[in-house]
Image 1 (cartoon, rainbow, N blue to C red):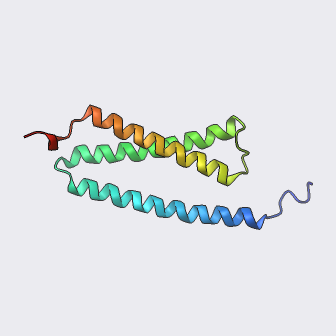
Image 2 (tube, one colour; image 1 turned 180 degrees about the vertical axis):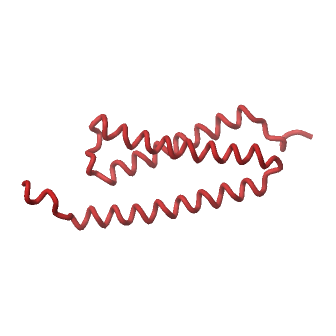
Image 3 (cartoon, rainbow, N blue to C red; image 1 turned 30 degrees about the vertical axis):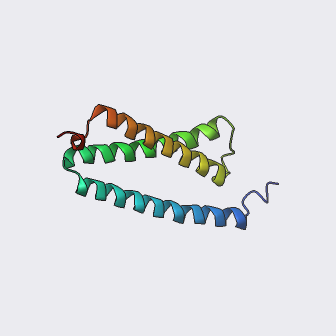
Length: 113
C-alpha cells in the first residue's frame, strides 16, 4: 500500500486535466460576459461593482463549498470530480444569490421613465 501511494492513476489524472481546461474556458466566458455587461450599462461604476460582487461571490462560494465537502467527509480530499461538482454548485448558488441581493439594493434605472 505504501509503495502504490505515489503511483499515478491515469483515469483520475485525465479527469483532472479535462476539468482544468473546462474551468479556464468557463472563467474566460465569465470575464467576457462581465465585460460586455459593463460596456452596455448606463451606469458603468455600479455595473462594475455588480460584476465584481458576482465574481467574488462565485469564487468564495466555490472555495467554501469545496472545502466544506472535504471537511465534513462528504468527499475525499483526493476526489477531484466530487469536489469540483460541489465547488461549481456552491459558486453558482453564491453568484445567483449575490446577483439577486444586488438587484434589491441597487434599482436599475432602465425601469424608470
